[in-house]
Length: 434
Ligand code: DLL
Image (cartoon, rainbow, N blue to C red; front, side, top):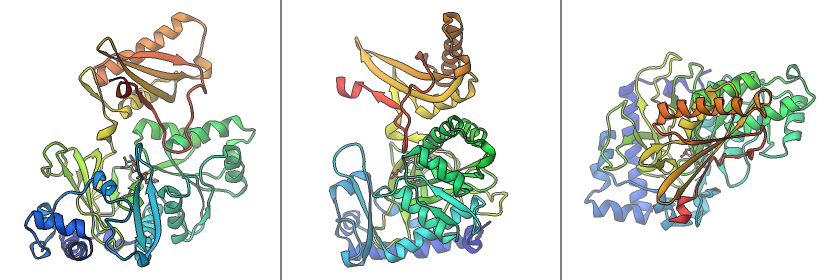
């Protein structure tokens, strides 16, 4: 179902007009209410009067994660603290978290875009949805929660962890939708198989998966293991949380809620805007948020945008699957490698489980590249020749996809650590050794 046909199916011209009006309002807001923005604009010699149309966006300075850290915790708010009704934060790997403040209207907006996502996944009033994203400062739990309530569905606020109970309640409460990270979905799928409960006892039909990169191959794996249709939901704390974009029944790209979050693709090296269809770094400007609007925020996510109308009837721009974040890209012996490339190869090979871990190191000035991967129960064998044959096939496929031959370490089923939130799939030891 299309939740908000007026905007989701708006003509491109009307959308650009609307975006232009909203951008201008946002620029006025930040210029007058947020010192760091005003300073940056003054340094560039621009005032709100220079922004009259969405194409003027390129005149504005970029914002980065570092800016959010520099103005920690509340320096980028454009509203008095008394108007902020909720805070969320993203942990980040080092140092202070990134903090985002929401006004009442921001929460309403979040629910609206969330409702668009869950409606596009075919969920509605009659459906029970288990939210197994973490609740708390992370936006996944409460974001999905608000979305389910807005469409009038019944939410089970499970949060992550406690896997046995997840499975019991999923069955007992008749959950039709499951919202969690794809890696936790995989964990749940294995645990469901190991439980004594037969698949027929579950009503699960729809997966709402996001918060980390996942591949088409992983989608197929999850769909067959869980007997569901698995949809992509995209978002990031700085912009709002889950709900920035979603797939539709066509599963041909992730529609962005561009009447609220204006997307651009730039060359990550030069900052130049790139034309539609070209891959680069995704940049968002929030054009309706009050609490902490962000202008030209560099996400570091790598993807491309497509503006043709979708067969589902929506005209909203679609983005391709996120290849990865520029900071997740490994450079191994000079070759760029994304964990998602490794994942797609592993999921294609029948004998392997989709559980893997990448270890990179530098020994005697040479990069080492090891992939640990689980072999399925029925293929795991003491016969060395069989294991060598599997290793060779993986190495051969990886050589043709990424141009490197890693050391493959086949490990027993269930030996790689499972994730209940965002998976950690890489240990780059060079960071500590260099
Ligand atoms: O992960 C928000 C979220 C929660 C999205 C639940 C979807 C579902 P952060 O923790 O700030 O926010 O992480 C944002 O995660 O920049 C991407 O790199 C990655 N990411 C999020 N969704 C997807 C997705 C939440 N569908 C960062 N595909 C983003 C690929 C994703 N990567």
